Length: 470
Image (cartoon, rainbow, N blue to C red; front, side, top):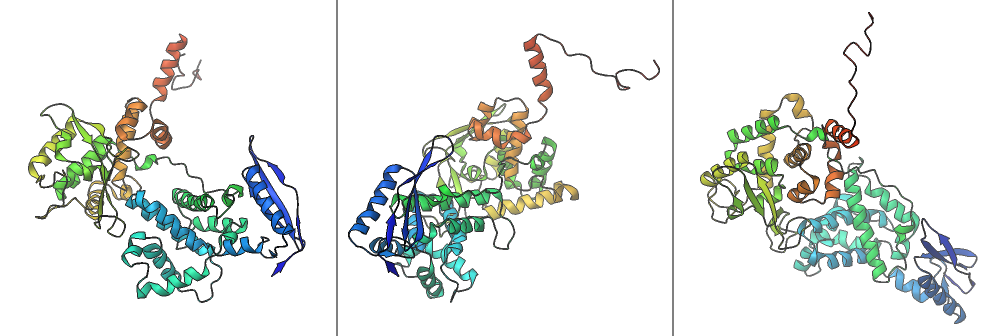
C-alpha cells in the first residue's frame, strides 16, 4: 500500500563515543515513524532532500518501507541473494582458495537468517549444500554456465525467490538475528570464538560492499550493540610439548613412518607451518656437515580441494603468509634438524619435483594432509601415556610450531628475532604466546635490582622467619 500523507522532520545529530557523530533522518508516512542513520551529515542531507523532493512532486510513499515508491521498488528488487553472489564474484579473482572456502562457509551460515519465509523450503541440508557448493562457488557456477545441476536446481530457485530485500536485511532486528546465528554450530552447540569472529568479518564485508554499491546508505552493523564470544587468541600452554616429549614423538614417527620424521622435525625445531614444510624445496635447505644450517622459505602449499582452486587441483602454491608474493623468510636449522634433513635428503628425497617431502610410492606428489595427520595420530598413541593422549598435549601437528616458538621465547631469544623467524608481527607474537612465556620472572627481578642498585633481602628459612624455639 502507498500513501501521500508524509511528514519529513529535521536531521537529528547523535553523539557517539569519542568525537564521532552520526546523523538520523526522521519522517512519517501515515503517522508511522521511519528513521535512517548515516555516518556523515552530507549523506543524511542528501537522503532527506530526496524525500522532500518526492513529497513536493506528489510521489506516493510505500507504507511498508517508508520510501518513495520508485526508491522502494528499486531497493526491494535487490535481495540478499543477489548481493552475496555479487560479493563472492568480486572477491574471487584475488582470493586464495582457502579464503574462498572461508567466504562461502560464512555466507552459507548466515543466509538462513535472511529468508522471508520457510514455506516450501527444501531440507536445511539441501539449502546448505546448494549455497556452499554452487551459489557461493564462482568456479562451479561458471562451469555450469549459470544453471545449477538438476539435484541443486530446486534449492537454488527457492533461495533466489525467498531471500530478504536489502531494505529488510538492514533492519536492526534482522542483523542481530543473523549475528546470533553465527554463534551456533549446525548441531546446535556453541561455535568457537575465532570461528564466530571470522564469519562475522565476512558478513560485515558483504554489507560494506552493499554500501559501496550504494544499495545501502550506511552500514547497518555499525549501529548494533552486539557482543561476540570472547576470543583470547592465546595458545593454550597445555598443548606445548617439552623437548623430551617432542623427541619421543619424533622417534615414534621415525619407527613407523620414517619418511615423515623430517616433516615434523621442521615444525618443531624451526617453527614451520605445515603448508611451508610441504612447499620446502631441496635447494632451499642449507645443510652443512657440522653446525647450524638455514631454511630459506619462499612460499606455502595449501591443500584446498579441486573445487576452489583455479588450477583444478587440490593443491595451490601461494606466497608466505602475510608476505608479498616474492618475499622470502630465513629460519635457522639447529644441528639436530640438520642431521635429520641430511639423512632425509639422501634416503627419501627423489628430487623429481624439487620438494623435500613427497608421498610414499612411485608417483611423486607432495605428502597429503590425511597422510601426515594419520602418522601424527599414531605417533601420539605410541609416544604418549593414556592420560597425555586424552589431554590436548600436541593434539595437532601445528602444536609443534607452538612448542618451537614458546621454546625460543623462554630461552630468552628477543621477541623481534622470534617474530622474524616465525613469520609473525611482534604484536601478534606476544599476544598469541603470552601464556606460554614462563620462567623469566626471577631473571627480570634481578635485572631490576641491578638497575636500582639494590640487593635482594634474604628470604625466610624453611621453618619460617623465626624459629618457634627461640
